[in-house]
Image (cartoon, rainbow, N blue to C red):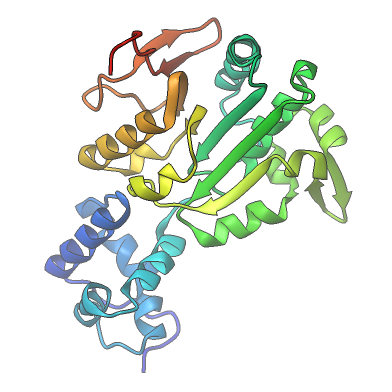
Length: 287
């Protein structure tokens, strides 16, 4: 029987085997310097299954019929979910003042707007997007759909609740807090008119088949997610995004991320407030 806080040793060869399973499953890549991180965070999973060591745990996630369920649990343990409302404000300003202004005209006939927040964590990003759209009165009466997805079930539960503590508002203008949230004790609950535009779901970004169920998107936000992937996995994710975007649709990455050496399928567009990626329009008649 292991002591509650005991860290079980993770041999180098077993670390690489487990690391490769995780990478193949969801694209997250842990370099050799991350061995202690896996050792520390997964030791409890070994105890939960009453296994003897990491070698036995590797066989469990490799061959057991419950391996898919266990990999989902691993995502909850390993993924980092640090976020807050209105993060990377220059980019959100470009979204609000430039991209939305453009889509107001290009989508005026169908009067719909579809946005995907890929790797939405605890939900601050999609709720921020919805609030910024709500401020644009020319979208009143439009069909606004925002999809938030993540591979971590635990953070999705928080996102669906829509209740946040003060730390989530570290850069938020008090105007948005007073207009779109209801204070409850020491927390703040997002208002229903914003919540009704957003759908949260579990989704592995490496799975193109489930992504297709989302349909076509006008904009995809995937910020500070690709930095945890290796290049091969990044290419697969970007291909999926390209497939999901309408012609002329926008891809917004984190400021530390770029498509250099990853994809040439997007063009870099210089806006007044920021630089973003755009899927080129397909020339008429070209399949």
